[in-house]
Length: 110
Length: 113
View 1 (cartoon, each protein chain N blue to C red):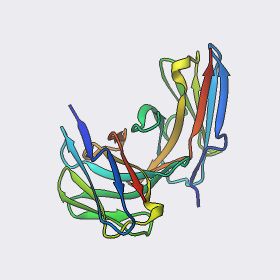
View 2: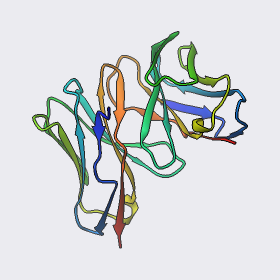
View 3: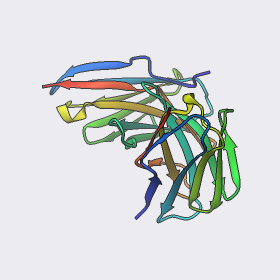
């Protein structure tokens, strides 16, 4: 039973345009959501998070949106840069656990 | 500052051999500790987590085990490795008494032959 899903395994975006990565969850007990960036053979790096009491959080080029009724969150990267190319994981947290999605590989084309 | 280290970085082991991966955290007390595995081309699977010394919660039944002998030390073990245990193992922590960002270690690449 996959509680956190990223249905798009890959995404290609032109440099300077917006990248939108999506994530769905099933467990309504999750109350904290995070996005991570990962390169091969390295640990994931934290990007941005959002609490369930908010619907938007912004940090520089990164914005996370949370739609609790739809159990959906998204990460917007504007403008996208070639250095953003990596695998992005969403995670949902509740009762000490952090459950990750399967990841979306983002490729930003120069 | 808070840091996390895990070792060894790379390990090649024969089937049936034992395993020990170690992780230590510095700069915080009573962290929540986690072990994840990323199999080839897959997502991050939660294996174990611990909210205190000697307290281990297992998420996936398998031939792996975890122990927390000290507040900031987390060990992943196996008595007999299987081919399916190959993968990239990641230790992570959340600062004590806090729900927030999960910090990851550098990862350990395990290849079982």
